[in-house]
Image (cartoon, rainbow, N blue to C red):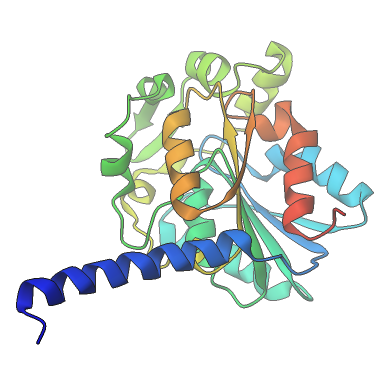
Length: 258
């Protein structure tokens, strides 16, 4: 008869194997062919930050929609993405940049979502305290540039140009700074209740020169989810400075590459 200690060890081993198996299915599954792409922006931005990628997706014959994330609370941000997903007419790849990885992780369980793409994005587990996780890595420089007006936060111009959009021409970075959408402080306290990457094929683009999310944290999250991962020599805004690489990853997730 198995004693209590042996039973506990077997139980832990079985749970670990189950988790690894779940990640493996998500990573190794061949994504279904999708023609719909839904893109979600993060902090310090608006939907226009996807313009370079959208143009390339449209040229490839795909239907691309950028969600205007309200940046108020996590439930409201997730709801804004879910409404866009509801309107899609078939399999859809859900793509998130930066903070919106939280939204992808939560809303990605939507039945129309066929695959997930994280672009230098947060990728928490269900119920995980992302802030606590991030603190286990060196704090990225951009964090010091966040300023608040009451409950409304934004990135200072100096931090935006240097730490958020550091590899973009200054004139272009200033235009992006001008359309920066402030976020509500309550947004940062939200926790996901789902982890869509445990059941959906997942892809991750690490920004190796990121000064907004630590690149090693990005690598950890990508590895943990078993994502197909690429590394892009770019700032946090790889979707703008390296749109070809990001578009190719999205096309792969959509089953549009041979």
